[in-house]
Image (cartoon, rainbow over all chains, first blue to last red; front, top):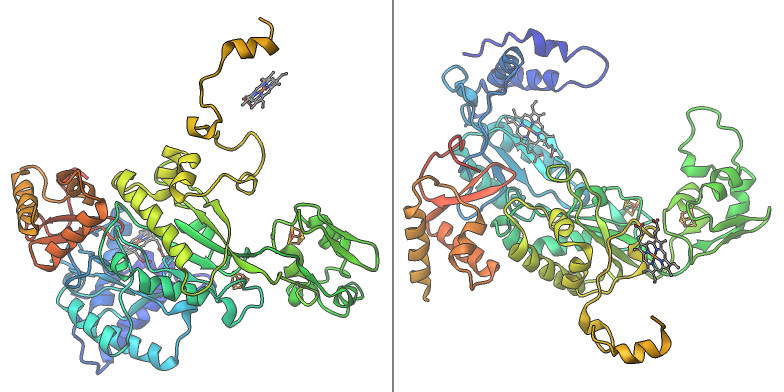
Length: 435
Length: 80
Ligand code: HEM
Ligand code: HEM
Ligand code: SF4
Ligand code: SF4
């Protein structure tokens, strides 16, 4: 079976960048000589390469889409993939993907990684993707009978659960946060773990019309890009003032500290120019430098992080920290790609995170009630309007939700909000206004 | 209605569909217009655990059908 003649794929090994073709070939060779007690076909990597070569030749994919593959009682975590040329490529007849819920911020022990690789070579293809865009550990390619076996070993030996797929909550995902980063405005790992545990049912059993993702960035630098990649983006922020160490600012200006943590080291960028590189680049023009002292008009600062990133030894986030919560980012299926929209300007983010859990409940109820099949939250928000969404969240419209006049949705008044309602006395009106 | 009656209604409704074997969660909501969607999804998930229904997923979207009904992989003739 495994003939492996792949002239077109071989082209993808040229050049200086890494090649998935080389990686899969390496695994294919390893499987030939290994003494692992393989529970999946030995030739799985060879057949995979041959099949992909055929797809290149035919200019057509040879995978079917979807299936019932899964773990008993779970409606997510396993993505069924079946080859449409099973006679010719029996080793990849079924080639299911597992999503395994990653530990927060991807902290692993090498022992765990070795165990996982051993498991995956024995019961899968040996091919992994660390990590998928969802955040999960992706284990690519196993047969139907192996799924339950792998799940048992994963949960009992590796103590790791499956992640989300399909119309479920997807594995929540967070930046490295307070474990390593001084910019973190809340404990992203704690929030991610707490909400993952809280919403186990939604993660494993489809209860929505489509997927729902939540991601946690510790600050507006957005290392997990929550604003672009999640239906609910939780982005760290602060309420009070940026803390300034004037001494350290002067040290940056004098060239004693390297700006951007020494990030621009590749070539000579000339001496640090605080006016050109910080003051003039502040998007809200709220900073000033008089040659000796740095001033920030914090009321106007929109927490873009630029000045702090440039001079981290001199500037620090404020002390009253929490998060802004935004909703509705999505990739383009309907209406094009969309970033999340600011909905809650500030929420404290402390255990047990009751406030955000309550908010999520309100939104899921509305989405389940009003959303169409396969309609993302962001599309529903567009269809029903932001004013309606605010009502669902039980928050009032706020100037911080608006980028500029004239580009935002209209706010419609309700009769109940108007003193005296819609009715008015025309005579009284005419006393003051001529015809 | 008791839980058993609810389940029977679901099974009878699905059996009554001749052209489709896979359904969205929304289709189940329509069977219980007076219920909240979350109650309905709980019921559906319970029926999967009991082996009456099964999930079918593209990886992106999940559909639900009677256990063993229709094609097990690829929905060539479904109207999704
Ligand atoms: C040229 C062909 C293909 C393209 C352009 C493509 C593209 C993509 C993209 C953009 C994603 C999202 C990536 C991510 O979330 O990390 C994805 C995910 C996925 N693809 Fe493909 N794909 C292709 C072929 C395949 C094949 C042949 C298979 C199965 C054998 C497959 C199985 C999957 C699975 C299981 C996922 C979800 C993985 C995850 O959770 O990250 N794809 N694909
Ligand atoms: C609170 C009071 C007002 C509100 C809420 C209001 C609202 C609006 C809105 C929503 C538009 C459409 C804008 C657009 O399409 O870009 C508009 C246009 C306009 N309004 Fe007002 N308006 C107000 C007061 C006034 C007053 C007092 C005047 C004149 C004395 C005025 C003159 C105009 C004119 C001439 C336009 C058309 C402008 C254009 O074509 O770009 N408005 N107004
Ligand atoms: S998002 Fe902010 S807090 Fe999180 S790792 Fe990145 S810079 Fe640090
Ligand atoms: S964080 Fe951004 S907006 Fe705020 S002062 Fe610094 S550069 Fe200006």
